[in-house]
Image (cartoon, rainbow, N blue to C red):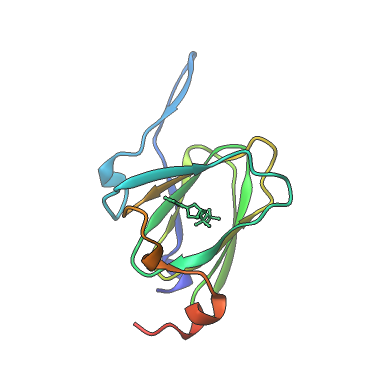
Length: 134
Ligand code: TYD
């Protein structure tokens, strides 16, 4: 998978004087989702991620606050994206290395994943990721 396949998508936002509502429906994503998890109460200076998935695809949303996502493909292509809007999602295909850092106080990272949790789907060593052959 190439770094250019990582992309930001606009999540529909319904605004009225009671506040905003955003919705992720199945047709918005290139994959069907089986799991949602979220990172919160992340201490300042903490680092998350540090892995790639063999098959799983994900959408990341900063529901609150902000954080930085550093991405890398097997060929050394790199991207760095700051997520800070609840109506903007970052689509990360499989076989992309990701690291999350610089969480602001109160930041919440929602992850919509194409699969249930399976540790066998993780590559947690950057060296193994770069040498991984499909
Ligand atoms: P980890 O993948 O290291 O988190 P991150 O990539 O966000 O830094 O997961 C932390 C722990 O939580 C690890 O022991 C695996 C476990 N875990 C689950 O049990 N289910 C899940 O859906 C996820 C994402 C993690």
